[in-house]
Image 1 (cartoon, rainbow, N blue to C red):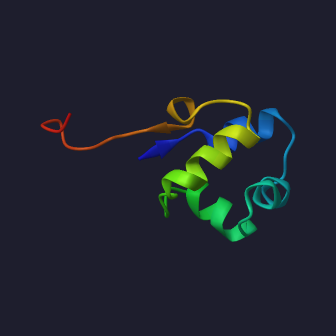
Image 2 (cartoon, rainbow, N blue to C red; image 1 turned 45 degrees about the vertical axis):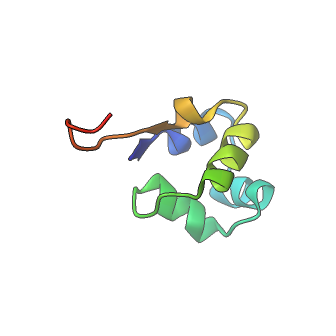
Length: 69
């Protein structure tokens, strides 16, 4: 799953630490998500979207098997 968190975070001048505090996670978690090393829970995805003033569909893009819907 790809995401645009880093781009949106930088557009809003948030550090990883600031975003992490807003979402109740560590800076390392934000870093792992931005680097596609960790897929957040649904609850965290919604917290990220709220903090970045967008919706989950704008933050994440599924890149699965072409046979999946």
